[in-house]
Length: 428
Picture 1 (cartoon, rainbow, N blue to C red):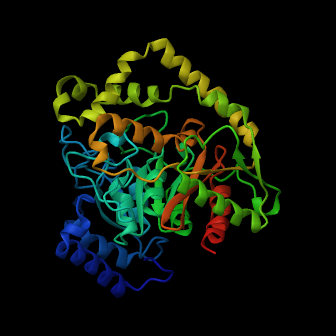
Picture 2 (picture 1 turned 180 degrees about the vertical axis):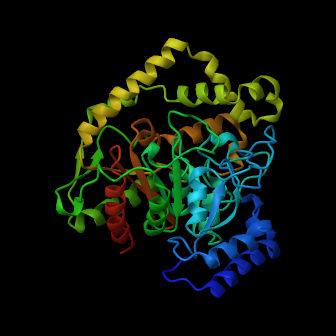
């Protein structure tokens, strides 16, 4: 794992050791990558060696297979897309490269990033390293597993409804979804232009923040120093705990008590905006916008698309144009209300209210739909409200789960600051 200070020889040895591990024990790393960037490692290492100032020198980063990486194809977990190799990096990936990070490979994902489970019938599904036989969470499945297995320090993904936080919760790592436009999405495939965010997963918040500060394209103007202000963690009494599994509830209550015992003010409170939010047909965003983005494939190559994904794209046909336009308008109004009601405080919730389902059970389409809905239930809130959100790992009595903190629009650095404090509390 990455540590402060940089020794080039040690770093080269580490990279070689990781490659040797992947090559010598392929079954241990099955379905994590769609391709490695190994043909470029020599040139990458030469660039890193000569780089005088690079805040990410010594960091190994894996990249979700919907970001352009120069010289490699961007497939989005699909087989119907067969583009030419990219001629340049996506904007945010270029920033990572120029800061001295080594780009390890494209990671596997749910096709088109359209599910919270992480299942891919084309390239296989990475096994969950904590819950054997279970899904890794998605859509950034391979990226999460690459971090959980220590073959990358950080992974870059996207988060449309929880795609960095769900796999983080399921695999015992940290997942961060920033406010949408703080990181450029130029050079990445889209699922839902309204809700997509570039997300980051790592072993801890320090690494997530380090990478975020390199990729950010927006000033910190809306952030205050929360450590010198009064703030409250709010557990909403009207959202986030429907049909929560017993083990998850017990673990969450223990984590909550740890936070309270540390001196942080935690209250349970009804937030009226969340009652309105529960009536929003969230599925319309991805259905309409995904079908629009990949319309030719939807019409002409449907048999090449994962049936679970095609079914979701197909739902766009149920949506009237005026209904969709009104949804966009209502969302902007609700974001304003949500930010006013939350203020400088933070929501405290379980990232997912259930443990990851067994992969075998997800072969049943009805079970798949139900498990997918449960996985996305809490995380989608931050995407709809254009907030920022982080999932912190917490384990108790053989249950590993995510503790989620949400903050208002553009409160990203506040969230990371408080998240770092909570991370320490949860580890104590």
